[in-house]
Image (cartoon, rainbow, N blue to C red; front, side, top):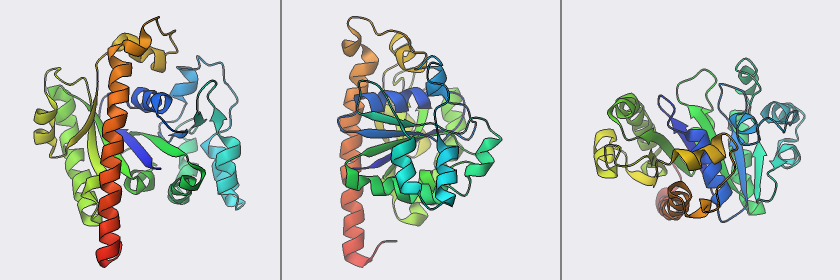
Length: 264
């Protein structure tokens, strides 16, 4: 079981759409956590079309943590997504509310790791890097952190310095294998190989550029008859296989470090 984190450096590469798409096509039960400090649930507004108002979220988890019941709150305050094995923990309702979550990020990172015992994987939508009240403990505590970027020059220019920062931080932690790139729209115009060379971070998985299918996740559009065979759903399934392989390598490397000289 694993904690997978998605974040962006600049622009709107589709972090939330990718996180939700991966969660809905994942082969095991998933807790999807909206940790974007911008506030407001894009999933409730988009995928649910605003029909799930009044849902509990991270601010309620923060209150539960103050009462010493963080682990219990994760189960009781997450919202089941109908007809799936996904549960959703919505984020702050607004950016000002995100200030109240800064003390929650570190204990939450520990609690999410503990969900391994219940057979649940976790996918975290951390939003855009560098914002005030950013969930850094979730980013650096993930089993696999994915810098989500598009393949055009503007996106790569915005992501380059953040890739360097993340690479340096994970190197200091001794867990470089935990960092990768999720590439959205390979070949528009650059390939995975081009992107990895520019950013200095390997491309772990790629998602197809497929606006019609993406709108099913981002805006709650009805999937067409052949939705499962469309480019984005197919690439989501392929991405899961790549991510599981990367997670296995990450776990194996960490086990070797622990056995050989203790965890760093």
